Length: 91
Image (tube, rainbow, N blue to C red; front, top):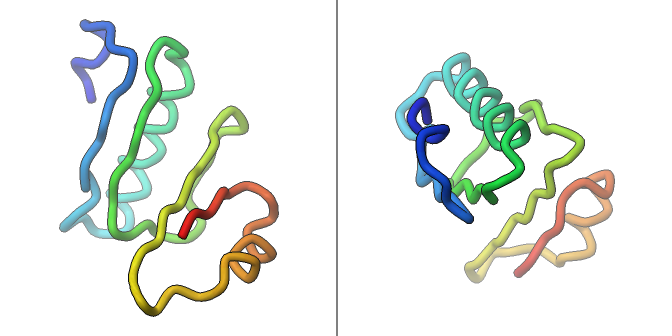
């Protein structure tokens, strides 16, 4: 993440950066990623991860898309009702 300011790219993909981290470091890495992504409007960021902690920081300029797959996914409306309008869910 520290070298991203040296190159221009239309989008960046961050894949499973939080795997193996303890909750404190995961929150710190997520906050740094959000700060980096929102201060530089030249790139669009994609965070690919099988899990996220609750209570993470989200910048007001962010849009979060959660994509769920699998046979045990609950109804889309139930998720949308619990997301306070911040998340967009796709099944």
